[in-house]
Length: 174
Image 1 (cartoon, rainbow, N blue to C red):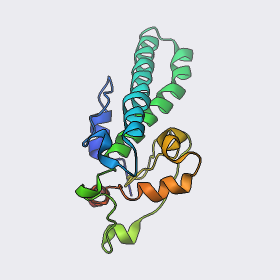
Image 2: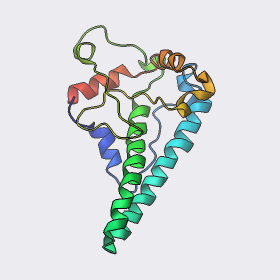
Image 3: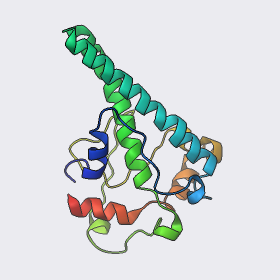
Image 4: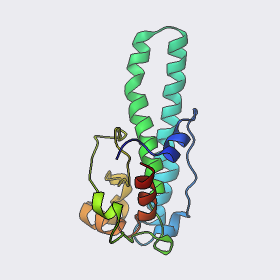
């Protein structure tokens, strides 16, 4: 694994950031992930990261024009957190697929089966220095309405909708 994927990064490199359109309907991942969770997670939670990132980058531009170094430094945490949230969620949507579209079918052999490695980051920090093959949102907003506080049940269910074909494409492009 080397660097972030071109598709996620190219959509992220645009300022202002834009909430990506999902490649499936909100109810397409049921019963693993409910339409209610998907709609809230995408249209509210991820949208908030996009809005906050855009606000922070606007403020950064204004601080740079004013040559306000303190303000520029103070904005870095907001840019990292909200930008990371945007990158990570954009990746998350792409690495899910309905079972009818190849979700949950881990390859029994090949490069992906031989090389899967788990790496975690704190908070919404983006994964740097690696190509993220899949990402699983482990924050409560991603599963609490469906699985309450039983993370293992959520993990068992989400593997039914992981888009392993997309993960293979990311590995091949690395």
